[in-house]
Amino acid sequence: MSNRLDPGDSPRPLVVPVRLCRNGDPLHRALRGYKDAPAVAARNHFTATVGSLLADFVGLHAPCIERTSGSSWDSVAVVPSSVRPDGSRLVRGLCRAHSPLEAVVRTVIAGAESEPIILERGDGVTRHLAPHPHAYTVVGDVRGRRVLLVDDVWVTGARIRSAAATLERGGASVAAMLVVGRIVDTGAAPGNARWWSWAESKASPGRDAALVPCCLSQCTLATTR
Image 1: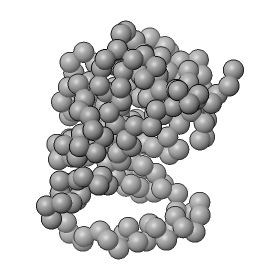
Image 2: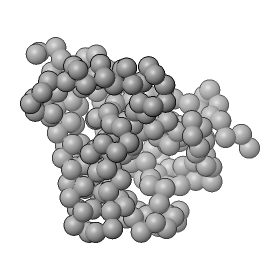
Image 3: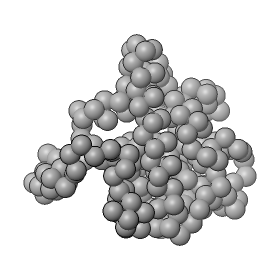
Image 4: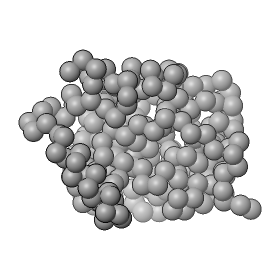
């Protein structure tokens, strides 16, 4: 079986990062720690950080996402974790409550609690730069649902693109793919390092991070400031 998505199975919804970060940055540590930190207090701290970022971003930029994507959403789905917080693999159909991101999303994004869409691990395996059309399955009937798909990290996009393909194949439409942290590897190419330096130079020192315009061309803050 090919692990490539067929053209009809590879939707390209809008990708919206809440923040860009590098390996080792504070946000990267939070995105690892909210699931993997050995101490409960540390996990709670990092979870609160992730939840605050999501709540602030969606509160300010939901209209930007809707305008740029051309679609609102009536449902929210979360890409399943590959492992449980204790390091063991998720068992299909079990342990849904153990997804820390799902718990965060349900508390900070409107619409996430009503008739949630549940994605489960499928038989396919995603790899670096290689989404798989059967990496996930969707529980129940999602035909006609307009979905905001959420994941914690984007490295190559293989996991969230696979999840989007599953939803589209089930008859849903994915309005946008929202990721808390999009990882930038500044060492991968000279251009990446130059771009990161340029982006840092454009940041406004001392500005409230929650009020920084998002990356979307139709961002309300970008057009009003």
